[in-house]
Length: 168
Length: 168
DNA sequence: TAGCTGATGTTGACGTGACAGCAAAGTGGT
DNA sequence: ACCACTTTGCTGTCACGTCAACATCAGCTA
Image (tube, rainbow over all chains, first blue to last red):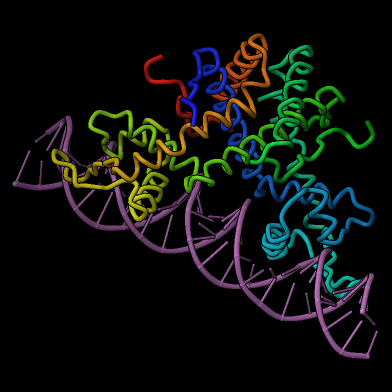
């Protein structure tokens, strides 16, 4: 075991600043969702469902799209079904499967929260960056992601949902 | 209500990349903690305690330092005390208060996980950045933080714990 | 066709985090 | 001393996420 190589002050400053930003931004966006009675998890599933043909997907496919664990999907769907956001039905061609349907209520909840979410992402994040900074950050993020992908401790889950307009 | 202003493709790309990086990095670091039997919450409290005079703090002061809710502190301390990482004692000068002591076991757990944590932060994050990128990211993060601080949906909690060496 | 293997979804346990409410104890003004 | 108000810490409740265990079904192979 080699001696621990501590962070120098630039590294420390960067890590603290990034980490604080990451947490606070997450929390602020989560609060924005909460103000509309949703969580970011709700939003993620509702978004994927709303873009699926006929607004429905097999739980399996839903899970693959958002890269969640099967049990996470199951728990989340149970809670969302109780709130009337989605509905589970038996899958026709595979007796093991479950088809998840977006309900009217679910679609309305999604449409209600969407504008505020995009506003918040802009206001708190994107509007604070110049185009050059956006490109630089994208480059950094992709580099870090690649590194995590080949690490023993990564990867795990989760793609975020595109907030871009479907027609763009 | 004005029409929703969707994200253009640069904005969308940046938001997706940043968001993915943020989640994956968090998860990878959490897994690294887990491999040593700790969580990032454990680590945060243990770190603060280990730097306090006599390795102890009033729960109130601990809460202020990490900017957590009182109930979150209480729940977390209960679980950590059950695992022997800390010990709660009555506060001498304030009958309402509780003094939290770092146990030997707690100190050992912290020292066991610390090198791996710093390694992971380096490997997955800092080593992927040039010095210029570190400075640029620090600037961006501070700007975003300032914006969040004055937003209705921010702020909330949490400062991350310095990973810099105490003597640096 | 019988049987093995893998895929699918559910459940329970546990740690975690946010919120609201509560009780005990300090604080300051009268 | 008495009062209202605040501070401190704890609890219960709920939502969330991970892990392991489980039951069921599909698909392949002997």
